[in-house]
Length: 112
Image 1: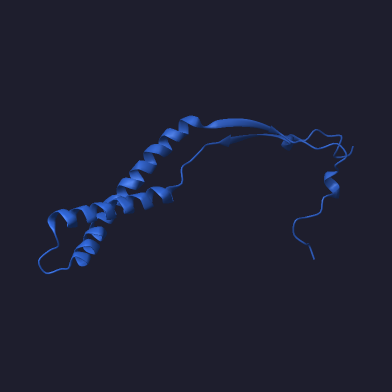
Image 2: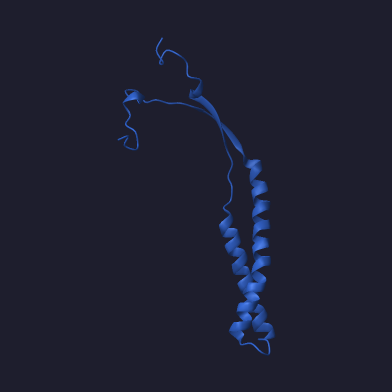
């Protein structure tokens, strides 16, 4: 009996697909929000006595960056949790086009 006569168990399989948001945009937005908050604070209150406006801005941006990163990560976690509701499972079946022999395929990388 050849391998073509036997039904292949691997011809059908289930695949689970879940849309997940990317983490990096949330973190970047958190840092940008921190920088914007630092600009607002420096413009409203003015620079500290011993520092220039740029020095105060850099210091507050660094100080606000960690909470901004934390808020971005929490927002990502909440959206990721909501995306789990949209998880879908698909049944896949192997499809071979007529006149196509899988044995004749060449490997992607040379085997030399």
